[in-house]
Length: 83
Image 1: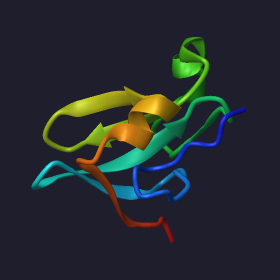
Image 2: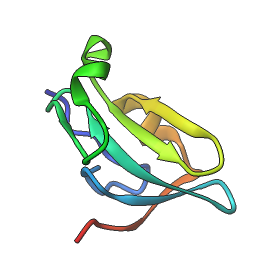
Image 3: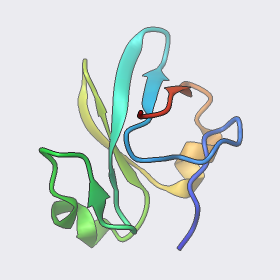
Image 4: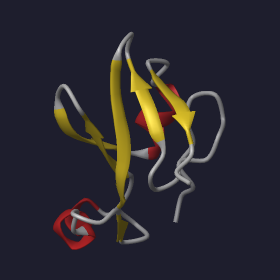
């Protein structure tokens, strides 16, 4: 299983609050390989993707990111960890 990292090097964790671009906000809602999800999401729905995570961006909906895309996306920034 590949550990997911943001472009700045921090590990991606379930529940992370992120900024996408200049003002869009989102949350990591599913860790696909680990088959874990926040309440209200079903990890098994995304199992066919095998890797990465699902991020729900308030203005745009759900996006799947794999390890390579996460590590290269300068517009995706960790704002806060889930408490």
